[in-house]
Image (cartoon, rainbow, N blue to C red; front, side):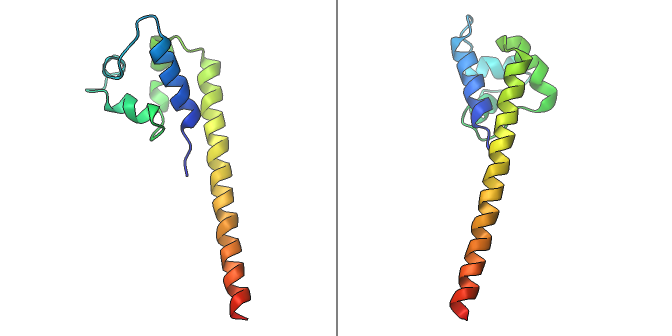
Length: 102
């Protein structure tokens, strides 16, 4: 239900197109992680970048703060839409069951 698609796309694009062409492992190491799994998870939209790491990510990948902020806000908006849609679907199922039992 949580959406990390926009931040995933931004990080992957900036990493791949960066003049230094960082690997996932190299970028993870620059951010203080032991292996590339963290960046792999971010780029596959499985998780977000911790807020405390945002400044460092912006510095390493030359990402304007406004771009990363926009990506995170779009992901939050999508997450809210996902939760609202799921809630509406649950209510519709309950309503359908109640109608069928009458």
